[in-house]
Image (cartoon, rainbow, N blue to C red):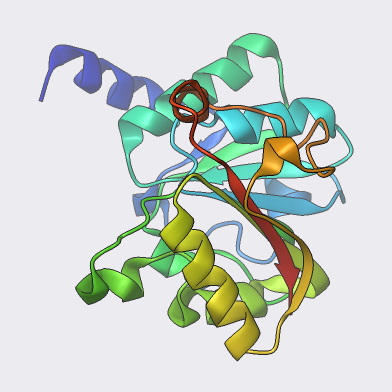
Length: 215
């Protein structure tokens, strides 16, 4: 492991806005009250990478709490450090495997979930790893408050089509769906937040898919 990664891992140990996977479940059921010290709604971004979407959402909605979740400590460091440097207090980061979500959040504790440009896991043998597979959808249903939304933004047409197929099979409610976000009427300020990778996709003239659904 490079010295830079080692330094970052050491730094996040001291960051107040990061909960590490080895910390157990100290905030389960009380993220708003005990972690953020308020009673505001809790919003998750799964596989948040460097936290660009998480931090920008937090800037736009100071009346909500945002938690970026990723397993890669190097990525979590970037998002957490940006939030600290910019004084964005309503954002935190949780370093865990996403399949363990139910160990860290109580039923109905989450108001909304964002999944932005996840690994599409295109191989059929890895379907269960897709963040919109029925295995994960069951977890989201338990975590979300009634009427809470899941948002998927992806450049991968296959993952989008797969997600819509599963939504329809399960009889879930689609609020918004588009296969070309930036040529649709839905590209508002929130959906127009662009991560580093999205900018690369757009520069290559890739279409951006988006679907918003609830249980």
